[in-house]
Structure formats: C-alpha cells, structure tokens
Image (cartoon, rainbow, N blue to C red):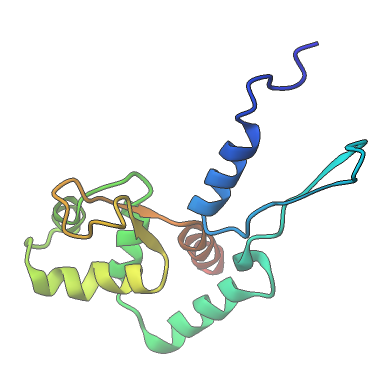
Amino acid sequence: MHLTEGRGTGIPTMRRVMERNSSPLPQLETDEQCTYFLTTLPVHPIFEGDQVSDQVNSLEKEAIDDRVLEVVRLAVTPKSSAQLLEELGLSVHTKNYKKYILPALENGWIEMTVPDKPRSRNQKYRVTELGRAVLERIISKR
C-alpha cells in the first residue's frame, strides 16, 4: 500500500520541523493496549488571536523604516547581513545593521540560520512565518 513511512522517522521529523518554526510540539496519545495513536498538532501562536494585525497596526503608528520591511522581503531566500545591506544599496557597516536588520530580527520577522553562533562567518538571515504573515498583511493593506 505504501501509505505509511516504514522507517520510523516521521515523529522525529515532525517534532524537529515544528520546533524549528517555533510551533508548540505535537501531542502524542495512545491507550495502554496501543489500540490507537492520536497526534494533535497545536496551532502556531502567530495564528492565535491576531498578533499579525497588532504588529501591522503598530508599524503604522511607529513609522518603521520601509527598508526594515525590505530586509524581511529580501530574506525570503537566506542571505548574509552583507548581502542584505548591499541589496538595499547601503554600505556594510554596523550602524546600518543596527538600523535595518536588527529591528527585523528583534520583531521576530527574520531569524538567524545559525542561531547558536551569531558571529559565524556562515551566518545568514531568513524570513520567519511571522515575517511572511506581516508582509502579506502589509501588501494587502496597500
């Protein structure tokens, strides 16, 4: 039938992916006789309530620089800080990193690809699910 994966890697893969995108871990349940197996995948926190709308509304009030949002858009494909700044037409300088990349990182719109080594020469930044949702809301409001 080939309807199930037979190597036993499905649950570890599911847990790893959900942990990577900051989702709550799946809840696994069975009875003592193992007659059933139930998996519950909790909703990601950005889809509970209206966190995205709150962030978009606060953007309008705070007047976040459009280049911060452009960083998020550019990070759809992982890029280094130097690549992001160069694509914005800015010099690769600490002040530009702090002004345009750091706010996107602090808001959770982008994330590091090597979070345990922030100064790694292989460090890149990629958009998060929250960042994608914020971009979609902003585009739909314009």
